[in-house]
Length: 123
Image (cartoon, rainbow, N blue to C red; front, top):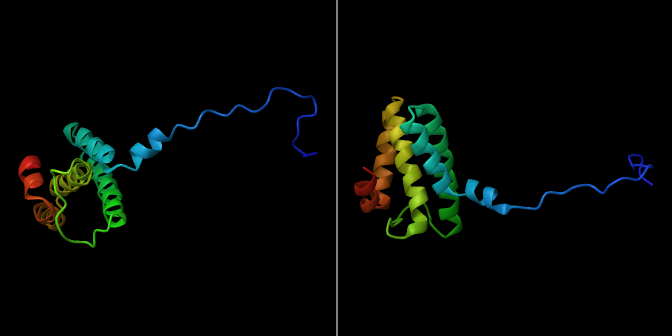
């Protein structure tokens, strides 16, 4: 018998069903990129920067798990890549807005090197 056992009986514990969708969404660069876009459009630039940075890092992790070695194309035409590319664009945009010019230039160059189509589409 456990010290914390209810000696009077009672209903069993309630467990909500496991819903992996919210966790999966937060693991997605696309969800973070959308949050960054919404915050930027709402004038919340620092918040946009934070969301974009999270999406960017989630995307880098996913790319590495897929065999990416830190350079090479990440084509916009492959839809699963778009979340990362949007987060990278959003990070550069927010960096420029808060006066982080070097980071803006790094992100802009990285975006162009990854996918010129993404740079043209998002720019």
